[in-house]
Image (cartoon, rainbow, N blue to C red; front, side, top):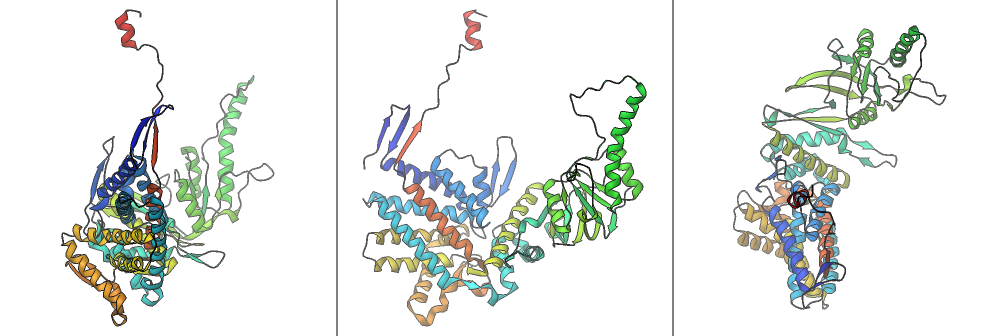
Length: 556
């Protein structure tokens, strides 16, 4: 397969053959090398500075790749792969990129040995299918057997590589409590954990251990006026999506007035329109009004007189969630079918109490014990903004993991256990096949070992020694029925030994492992199928002479 680079008649360059494949593989390897050192409980963080000078310090693979401005089309596929894993599972973004790059490296070697890419692709597909089947049949553990402790351990495993790993005991309990608080059952009777309903607020100051979980919804706003009550018990809540300000006539409207007294009447009516609206809302018994728009001083006066709490400039997302939790109707307008304005008591929501509290430098409004659906908020504390931002990303990952475990009810042991078991299984499977796919499956099994190897390297341990021991244990467990329990053996990266990770409580969601294998294989196949790249030149704009040219020529 000769590599050719030729100029095309369409105005671009064409690269084909083995050179484009090698280019793609090296681009993928470069991306993987960036995130490699951040894998595992002793992984290191990356500091990313963008063109404006904003600094992000993170350990999360998806965030790192999102902030890199990647030009190469094959490398972009890996960045999108990390995003996909983040959306689908929420965790395992680093490992999915590393596996995909390793699969590509192995495939490139096979293609150089004159094995057709199609054979490699079909071998990879078969290996992926068999691997997923093996995980589900032999390596998954049902959470029903292990109880709440197992869910906490999953959260701990997810946090172990993050900034909050040292306090994982404290945070894992908080994450599980938050996920349990938003538990709901849909129309079909399935249990759902919408973790978007867990509102995470950040306030720097104090230490990470001062982070609190509020059983209710925390709103990063304050009351409109200091004369309003700061605490309302059993409130009636109105959620509005319009401004309560003095109504002004629209632009472009002209009114010819002959009598100056009528001009005053127009001004008075403008003020009365909003007053009528507020009276209608207050007449239903509403004593807490939350709006996304503004409330001017004139209108605030009516609320103060009525002893109601009014909060302006709330975020629309927050208000929609509050409306869901409290059973209120999110009102875009007060207009009814008859074209008149009305507000009914059924549109109000309720909860146990609403209170304004001071946390750090900010005042927050806490909606405690909402009526129709439970909510939870986590208020993160940390030394500085970088730390709090990274804590938020870690909490999001842990919440996603807990959600996946609770919904799928199955976990697998972590610490390179699954990858080592699959590597042995696929190696044995490859030798039992007599077709061309044999070599591809053998390479697939070798590629999976990159995870335990990298985990050991990052922990400053001897990777060759540890991975050999791990493979020996898994080989014994698969060959000899009496040693079947050895299949739970994984790495202990702190002590640099191998141990039973099921007993140690190192768990990951089974969904995460299966999806990351599928996604990595698909991404590798997508890049492997490419054998030709045509890059068009950017269009040349025929602009006239520049200002400097005209100045030199003296034609100005």
